[in-house]
Image 1 (cartoon, rainbow, N blue to C red):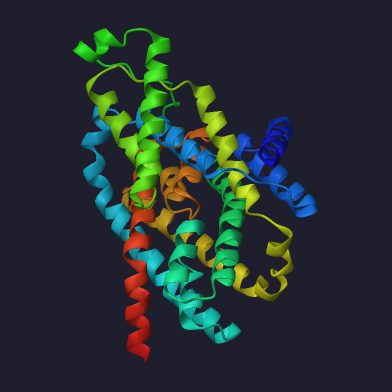
Image 2: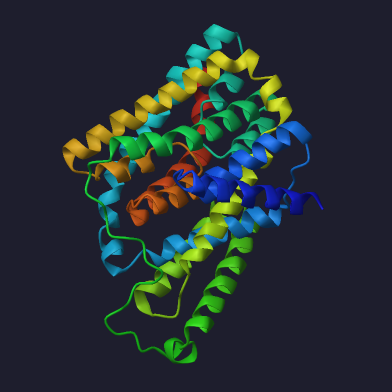
Length: 352
């Protein structure tokens, strides 16, 4: 029953946010509504299946925006990603060292708290590395909520005079795609059903694999591949709103009274962390725009340290280049899980 109440609160928040003309209202509205009511009543809950479903649908939606021309230019994203990886790594160690000195936390807790990864992923890593899991989870949650609340407005303001990219579409027509699969799946309704079933199935497969962001990556790759070679996939724009609603509600579930009760002792670290990410976002975006690696809006969304799913869905609402943003965000998520823990352990061993 609690999951029904959670979704109802999310829908109510979505409608209010849309009325108040907030950016990405389905996500931000549901997150705020579920989070605030959960602080008051401690009721919110959603099954893991909802997270997988939201990520799978998000991956399918992103995959629909990737066509043949987008695949051809992905090689050009290697340098922007490497630049972002270096900047985020330096930021993790600089801010982590500052927090350790200011607050007296152990090194692993301080450094893991500053890693720009998923809340669940980093919390699980913290358990394995014997860090203070509660502190790490609280810092990661505060970072995620802060980014989702602040960065969309910040990006919208900074890029208000930037030219808009092509509008997001439900599906991309191909020059000629007359494959056996096209003849088998020929109506719009059958394409929608096929895409949803394929995406959800691959989302659960990705979740079972244990790979970072795989619930989104597997459907995204499959739908993108089919979108480049056939015309059998279709994802209505309304599905994006459902994915945003679920994603925002999931973040809201993680906002509890305990989060805020412990916030007083971690207010300085949280503030320092958010300021550092804001600085990285500004520097990275400026470098990318000046060197023409990415347009300003894409660079700002690609370097915003929110969830890969969350930032991609918000970017879709604000007219950014989804194919670039999603790929860099997914690579970032994989990088911080695969590379940052060994780097942190190596640093701790080096300092003795």
